[in-house]
Image 1 (tube, rainbow, N blue to C red):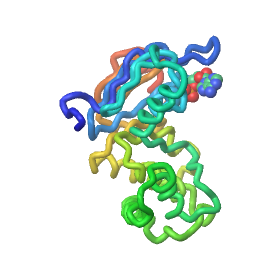
Image 2: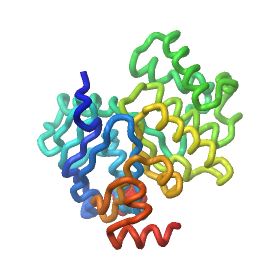
Image 3: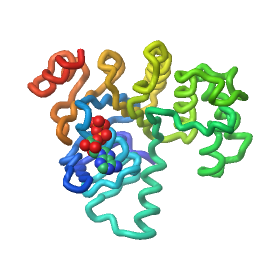
Image 4: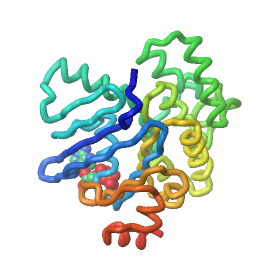
Amino acid sequence: MTDTSRPLVAVTGLTKAFGDNHVLRGVDFAASSGTTTAVLGPSGSGKTTLLRALNVLETPDAGLVRIGDVEIDFATLPAGKKARAETSRLRAQSGMVFQSHNLFPHKTVLENVIEGPVQVQKRPVDEAVADARQLLEQVGLSEKADQHPFELSGGQQQRVGIARALALRPEVVLFDEPTSALDPELVGEVLAVIKDLASQGWTTVIVTHEIRFAEQVADQVLFIDGGVVVEHGTSAQVIGDPSEERTRQFLRRIL
Ligand code: ADP
């Protein structure tokens, strides 16, 4: 059973370099179950790399990542089969929603949502379908179950992407700038779905440039610059009354 007295997500001393480019330089943060963490920061500061490291789409050079009961110390991760087994256990703890949804174009909305549960998790099809229908209702797309992605708007496609991530029943849902590829008039409907998830108790980590959204929804805000967490706290602290000059400069530019 998951220990509820400690944070659901804990990251310590995370580092990652691409060649000479030291993108993450010792990132620490923790997130409690049922909370929303917004990750803000200038372009190129390492936000996406951090998110991808949580899902082990990038392998950190060093540092500790724990989600629920699965923990990896990347400094001592051995190479080979054992490492692959451990990274896939950690990866299964989180579900990722990308900037662009990456839906299978030849599959229906419903088939897209059940793909992971059936193919990866080997869950029975009827159970996965029932679950998927419930998730599609949750993202407001019950009527679109039998349509194909090209028949949907960008916002609707992104909502299918969210349902698809949730279908894997991850401990944490990771959003990488989920609205940045959308036309402005479609941003609101996707943010509304994410806000709804927060109120239903999902644990989420969101990289976003939507500062007002972060201010409204996030329990915790991390401001990242140069591969470190410069400042973290409640949205009222970090956005409303930042204590670091770098945070103030960033917010002045963006707001
Ligand atoms: P952010 O999300 O804050 O804009 P990123 O994490 O995407 O920042 O990128 C941080 C830095 O890491 C950038 O300089 C980017 O070019 C570099 N980077 C990210 N992914 C890779 C990669 N796969 N290979 C090489 N460099 C990368």
